[in-house]
Amino acid sequence: MKSIRGVIPARIFDASLNHKGVNVVTFRKHRWWLLVVLVAAALSYPVEAQNQEQPRWLLGKAYHIPSEFTNQESGYFSIIEGKNSRMYIGTAKYGVNAYLVEFNPLKGVMQMVCDVHQVIKSILRGFGAQAKIHTRNNVGQLTGKIYFGSKQGYTEKGEKLTDYPGGYVLAYDPKTGKTENFGLPQKHFGIISVTPDEERGLCYISTCDDGRPIEKSHFMVLDLKTKKYRDFGDTGHSYAFIVLDNQGRAYHPLRRGLVARYDPKSENLEKLEVTVDGQAPPKAITKDGAILNWDWSHDRKTLWCVEMSTNQVYSFDMTATGDKIPGKSHGEILAKAKSTDCRAMCTDNKGKVWMAVTEHGLPGGAQCYLVSYTPGAKAPRNHGKVGLADPKDVQWTDAKGKPFPWHHAVRKEKDGTHTPWVPLGIAASADGHVNVLTLSPLLLIRFSPDQLK
Picture 1 (tube, helix red, strand yellow):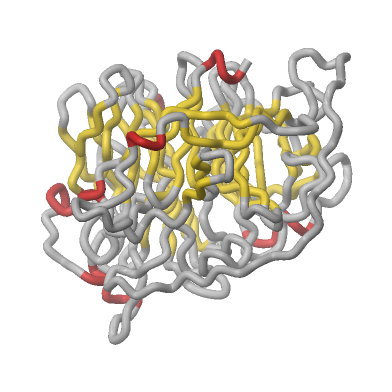
Picture 2: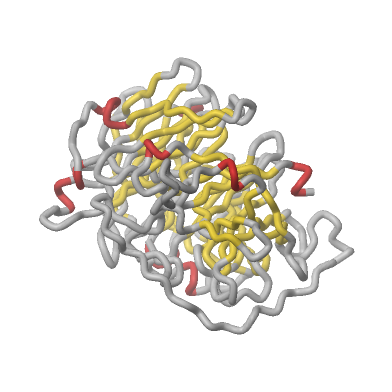
């Protein structure tokens, strides 16, 4: 994974220490001019305003994911709301294990619902451990099961990539409290994407070997009944998100900016070219190592895309015929920002796109914003700078008053506001809440519909 502009090393985007406690974070001071902010107010677009001139503080209710389920206060973009209105969050405990945590927003309670090693019956530690749940969690539309996968951590001295047996595809059923194990799709490869299509009895998988500079990543389909996998081959694209269209076709990014589309009805795999605004796509989204955050619209006709560091929102028409998938650009996520990082993007049940994005190079330090885009609007809307409404509810020190070592990604501003600046995941709730997952400490921050009007 790419680094957060020199602040967090490229080999980890979620934490600062390895599982043996070695500090690997280096902070760099940037001396850039204060960014000039775009004046808001396009009154002809009442649904969505442009980026505001002076972003306000947007203070969310913070809930701490229990520390026993991490060893570096870290997680990834593994967050989704279940059909029961509860949030499901994957955690990382490097060299040890990975866990799925359930959050009940009505009670404000977190509980672990899946211990990966217990399910797969493993006692391996170090690089052999199932160290992460890194997948974008997805919900089975028929059963309400939470589909996810496990992934490798990072090698230490004397360890090699083949020490990792491989990741597992899993599905937790909130109704029964049990987790189904769909096995290990590919030896020595972790799981980075799991997207179920229960109506057709299928589930789509993307594996990852964590190789550099070009990662091997296989696009696969699982028969949920027989638990057998079909491998479509290496895509050469890291950190893939798999989406489905309204015809049940599955999309997976390919190296060099192409898109693989599998049609389960014909069992054909196509390779599609991409266009943006009628032209060849920008190199920013076709280059090797581009991290493409994908999600589909509620009607599954549009693929929404944000590349991690490109500061642009794109959409692609999944209903188009032919051998191309046409796209459009919808403007800068943060107006006039020179350096951004967006690892958190989702769509809600009304079609709006939500993003938690970090701007770097500011005099006071990196700043996280919550941004939305309503289809048809002139530009994305900046809802404000993310802050914590109740920092006292987060445990910042141990029993002796010593600060925890894993809280480096929350900064206290001069006005007393605590602001987390490394968002990792985002999920929209059916009732209008937006939930952002941030790093170190690992927090779930909720914003109410009233705040987001």
